[in-house]
Image (cartoon, rainbow, N blue to C red; front, side, top):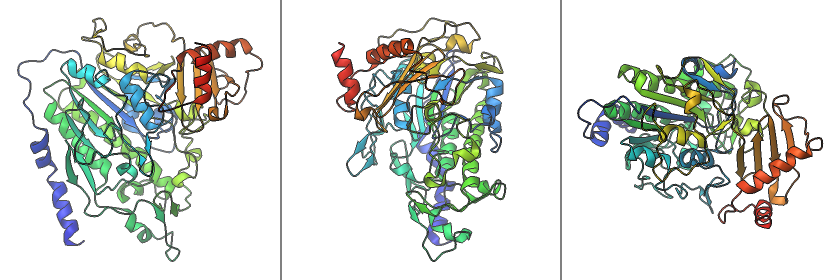
Length: 509
């Protein structure tokens, strides 16, 4: 390695110095009350419902998240805020479903890809509620809350400390040139490797050396995970919330050689020679390695909490922002791994595979180990469940800002009975325009809404989880009821127009 690479390694070794300089703050004095607990929210990106061992995965190791599920509660009918990452994070933080949020798809600017505009978040989001209750709120990973072109500052005020990608544009690679720590630019790779393109025709796709130009010295998820551990360590004497939306295991397929080696030779492979994403010699092994790396990062967070004696004072929540990528995109192959658990649809779709996601919550001493919940729940429920309760056995806090479409899941976490949720609604202006409603065992879905108000499809998920038999013609009574609820729940948005739904809602005002 040249001198530049040596300097780069020296910079990485100074991580502890960065932490001391940028995250040290006055610590709380005196003994803190036992409740409410610390909160850690970990959100994977493009992880399928079936990608974890505790949800049926057989090819990929996820022992740490499986252990979380065994020690807490696992939800089997939980739905992300939308079929894409940005929409899901907005629903989680605002507590509003996508028919009400200001953001209803990825936010785009001409020629700039995805823009990180925090419109739609305000002083009534989850982090505001937590900050008002004395929490130190920290963000790591890809929070999608940075202002557009925020390379030099502009952290959303709710987060007092951050270790993040600047933007989702920057997050197209696992080996970025720079990251951001509390608004300061941190150089982690001396040179940013290529993250798109095809292998040249004159190189051997089976030769590992052909892929050297697509790798850097520092793998961003590991750097960010190290910062998350440091933030917990520094803030452990205060009440804190760590908001940790990971990049793993989304495209491109990239992981350190040592991680890929565990799975190399275990699966049939065909090199992905590149295109919209960086090439990968062993795409199956790379994806499996990325999921296991994600699991190991979760395991390190759990171990840090336990080492600091915070086990019973900390709720740890793990979920995914949406379903897995379509097969053959960037070398991905969710069919091979059964990433959707047999569900129909992929990322971007309101069919089950695009939006039903894992949800695991652990809080030892409070949530009984080994519980499984099959009740309907969604991302909008997490704000009121986590950010509104002043103490474990106290009433919900009404501070004038908790306007939410969510329901409180706390009784479920405590093993108490709770009335079934009457319905759950989703819509997105993306991928042709879609809307869906879950009501008991039934699900109604409309697609291609950009081309008019299409007929509703109706599925009985209790008997047909794969959504293969449309029963709309047999049950017009249910579709009519769903149509009414969908119309009531859709508020037209000038920024994200859905002409057919907008007109339908206005015609029935």
